[in-house]
Amino acid sequence: MKRMKLANPLHYPLAVLAGGLFLVVGVRLVRLPSMVAIPGAAAIATAGATFLKTREPIAIELDNPALSKELQAVRQQAQQLTQTADLLKTEATQVLTTAHQMELLGTVQYACDRTEALPTQIDQFARRMQGKDSLLSVTDLEKQLKDAQLKIQTSSGVAQMQWQNLAHRLEQNITLAQQGEDTRQAQLAQLSTLIAEAGGVLQQLQNKLRTTDFTSAVATEELKDLSDEFKSFQESVEVLVG
Image (cartoon, rainbow, N blue to C red; front, side, top):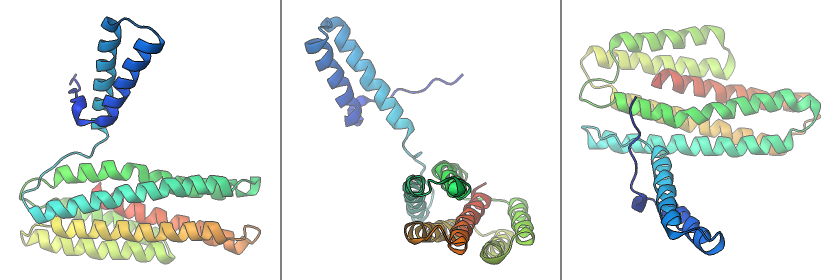
């Protein structure tokens, strides 16, 4: 079993603060002997630093500086989308409170919850971008295309158009890979576009949530449609990074 590497508390001010507070409280209020309080404070600071380190995005350097910059921008997009979705989920919980709104609340919450995995998925995606070869083989890209084409057949409206756009992008990637080109930049650009579009739908969801008359069945259905549209964007992202 691989042991977790301890982090240096000096690199994490919050961890040092937690250790310092324990030391002050332990010595002045609880009257702990210094031989107990000092090691305890050090242990708390180290444990806190190690925990904070695990929350940081994985540092991955690509062979192409431009790609590294784009990857960092996509990571930030993913984190912002996750934070926005979390705020929307909290707002929906406060607004949708009656029994007949529980199904709609569940739909919105489910769509928002799925974004929590996005930063981790981006890190997994980043690991696979290391090296000078194309991110995915033609076989992998063809599998993604097949998944997208299946979604086209089983969806409709805006969601179907989204899957058609993704299928077109994947066909372009397959052509690049067959020509021996590096597909990483194209895939990052596509991923960035999908996250940005998902963010736009999330903003529409928030606006609707604040202005919708929930006694109107039509308005409620529009909110549900936006939740489904947001979910389809998430599924498209998962196809690209999965």
